[in-house]
Length: 88
Image (cartoon, rainbow, N blue to C red; front, side, top):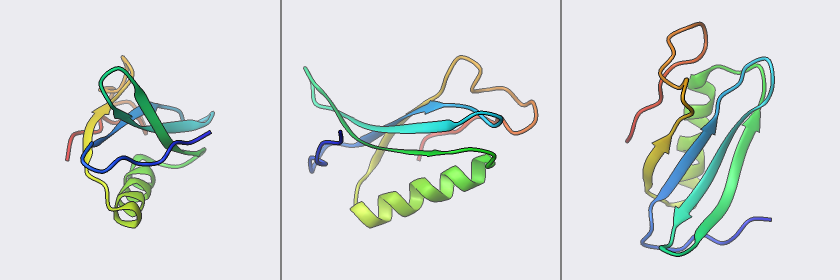
């Protein structure tokens, strides 16, 4: 279930990196005592540029501002398709 975007709060992304299995990017807002999970992007067998373009399209469609991009412990890996995502 997805909640509605709240104006004035940046959207943070939480990445579950994957290539052979699904890669998921959760879209969330930190509202203090609450986390507002507003959506996700998921696919498989795609490179990082594909997901970056999906995020840009989603941002433009919904008129949001991104905050933090949180990667797993191995997010800074330079092996193969796993590359580090950065802030805006």
